[in-house]
Length: 191
Image (tube, rainbow, N blue to C red; front, side, top):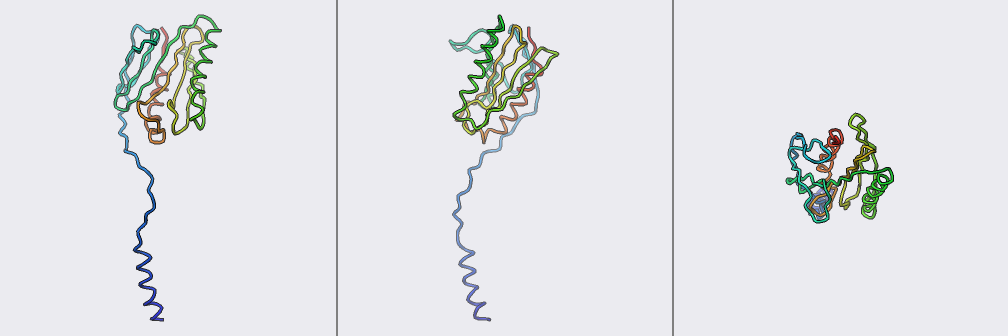
């Protein structure tokens, strides 16, 4: 019995002292999110809403920009919500804007694992729209939306980050901005 015990002790040390070379998953830095606070954007635009205090509102100055296009810029997160506004003249034109918004969402299909649509209505402000959740590690725009009064206004928005898409690591920030987009819907008013 002693001999067996003495032989197992060295075997125990050999097995327990081996190095474990199992690769570890890559980790991401913790992202510090600011407290929620909002400020009103109210200008000569045909729409107004509250946007986060940790963001800025910047008119779109690109050559291809149309009137009342703008960005809500989040400099600390290298992100922006691009807003494009269209004036609606008739129902056929509105239907075309709906189709365009869905086309922009469907362009993400090659990189998306799922696309969920959520209908959002705020009848008291005549705001009716859809929030698109685009799931997928490499989807360029994880959140897109459109809002309309069904008569004369159409506003489309898309969240973009100025980094290589990796929505697994950006998930906390995307969820944080989703709350801000919901707040935009709740406070949106047409002029």
